[in-house]
Image (cartoon, rainbow, N blue to C red; front, side, top):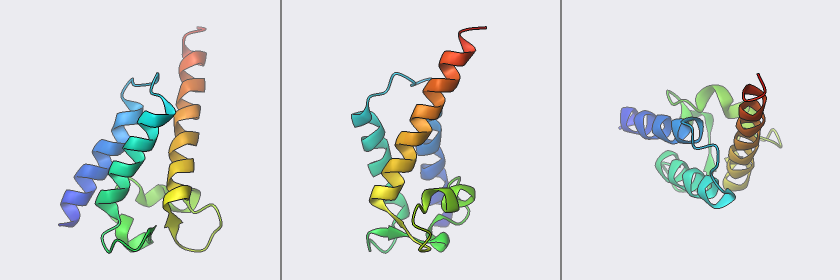
Length: 98
């Protein structure tokens, strides 16, 4: 079961990084919701380090946990996804200048 979460979360992570830089905020929100649904195993509305263990999000947990309480809420996750999208757009615009 953990492997399934890792695969789905990995696919969700790759979506915003796969050249879909023109994605709207709605697209980002939909991607975040899809990722969220697969990882919040106990459906308590928060992700724990255990729920994201062995997924691409494991190394990003602390960055997503904006208030440092050891849990990532859906709002924190969505904000992280938006920030990641913005960073990718900036990097892409920098690449086109060369």
